Image (cartoon, rainbow, N blue to C red; front, side, top):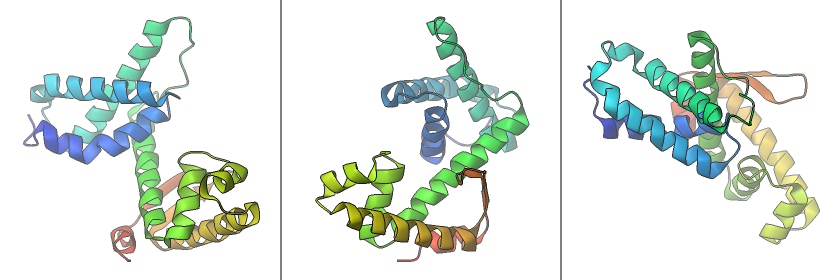
Length: 186
């Protein structure tokens, strides 16, 4: 049994849980629904957790199987390539934490860069769509994206160990103790 109550667990893990599930389900509404199902299962089974040090792994296993159950209930859609082991779950949690770190670091950038990066990364808008939404010229958006990405990469280098795939996307990220100092900077 854990000494943490459900509200503390929810507050601690909600953002990472949403990131994890969003990586498996490409629908924001379904992601929210599945996340709520996960927390209902956590609430129902919290008294069965014997080792509090395994809380995070236990929570993400519940999420994994809830996603699998979702796909099984749809039967017409194939199961995605879901995690197969505890090691993979832990790696996925680290990536979700890395995504949280990136978002927190973006928030420390000057607003004009943070805004276009959020639209580009989080809303997945194109530069042209960002220009339309913000009223900026296309060249201004491209410039801010380029400078914002450079600032983000510099800050990431100081607080996280980042590995990139061949296409330039982040394949693995592990944040160091410097991370909390970086995100508290104005």
